[in-house]
Amino acid sequence: MSKISTVKLYGAQDCHKTKYYQDFLNIKGIKHQFLEVRINNEYAEELRNLYENRKLNFPTITIGNKKLRNPTDKELNKWIEKLIMSI
Image 1 (tube, rainbow, N blue to C red):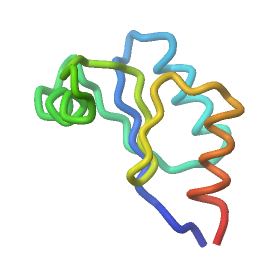
Image 2: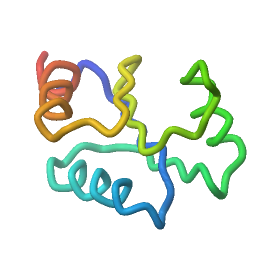
Image 3: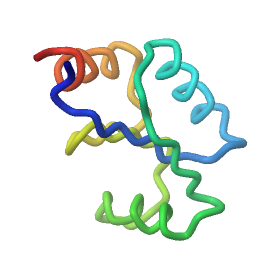
Image 4: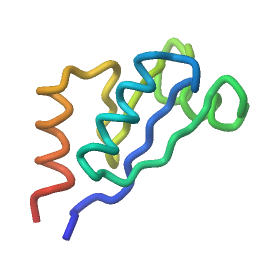
């Protein structure tokens, strides 16, 4: 059904924006992997590798190869429809 099934949310459990995106994805029924970057060094390194500045820029959502840093609802919906919902 979906073109791309790999959705990752890089963030921190105590970050209100991370929590917002977790809730957003859950409400939409989008299966995703939450990667806690403050606790897990492997996840932190994975996130750093997404950015030239090597900073922990979270929350960041990846959908396949598309990287979204603090996307608006409209932008996130656009990429969900384009990369997940379309066949």
